[in-house]
Image (cartoon, protein in one colour):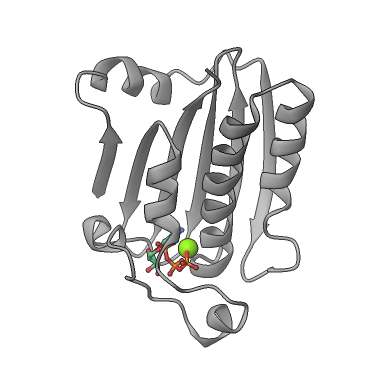
Length: 163
Ligand SMILES: Nc1ncnc2c1ncn2[C@@H]1O[C@H](COP(=O)(O)OP(=O)(O)OP(=O)(O)O)[C@@H](O)[C@H]1O
Ligand SMILES: [Mg+2]
């Protein structure tokens, strides 16, 4: 089991608790993400963005949420055999989880390096595969957790605070 965290120093225990205590969300949204369905991949992210916009979330925060969630949603479609996106919305933050089955990520540190990609020809035909999605998710989220059982499953989850 590979595990990767990006949490600001000093915030570990507070933020890890936000990842594990996901029962009391005010709103929960779930989307299925089928394998290689590039015509629909991205819809979950845009619906979440639209809802948060109606709820009055700041436009710069909204932009960061949209970038991070779009990249993670495309990754599930591009690299896994299918998965789901779960968005847990609280009054002060959003926690978005992407869970899939597939090859997993054996070396997460390597996958985080800008430019690293295992995208196949089909994925590249759709314009993906620059190896910039995971670094972008890290850049645009307040806390990131990736966990993978190589050959089986991947979990990518992140938090963004509204203020
Ligand atoms: N959900 C996933 N399941 C399996 N492997 C993944 C998953 N997400 C990312 N990876 C692995 O991590 C690599 C880097 O991901 P990243 O999003 O940074 O780049 P990319 O998807 O290849 O290209 P880009 O995002 O720029 O279109 C991928 O090429 C793949 O090997
Ligand atoms: Mg990607």
